Amino acid sequence: MAPNIAQLQAQIAALVSELNLAEDVLAALQNSGIPASNVPVAETDSFPEGTTAQEALELLDSLIEALASATETALGQVEPPQLVRTVTVNTELAAGRAYRLRNTGITLTLPAAPVANATIRITDGEVLSATATVALARNGQTIMGLPENLTLDLGGVDLLLWFNGVTWRLF
Image (cartoon, rainbow, N blue to C red; front, side, top):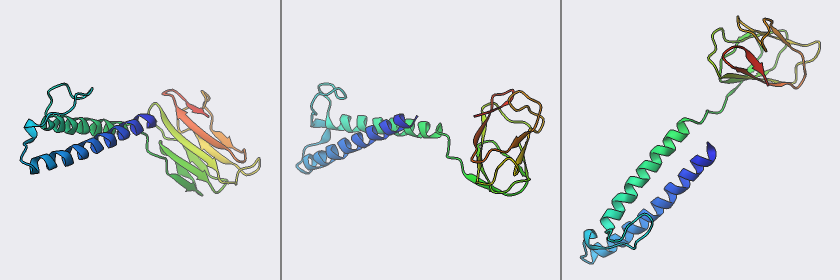
């Protein structure tokens, strides 16, 4: 998605630049007494032969609006960055969030009714080990198809949980 947004923004910038230049030229011509409707523009891929400056400006303006709308739509489809929450006590996890563990002997509880494609990220804040663990409670769902809670006991873990609509999967 990001390359498309960058491409749209580059197109908008180019069109705005063309529009600004055309407006400057048009203003100079109008100051000389020549109306925009009488000024022809050079034929291009965007402007067929016989296009006037006024028509070209209107077309450029509509193209900018269309590209801005497409950019807005594309940006709306980009998943916002996850804010990392520090966890030191028992916590009910929320989909779309990231958590950094800063204490052991606690329980993290997965959402009871997750929607398909929900994700949760859990990272070790340098506290996990074979003897210092955190429980991940499944809350009625399965984890990797198993009806069991999960014990986090691997130092340095950076875990992404994804709910596929049936079970929580670990990545």
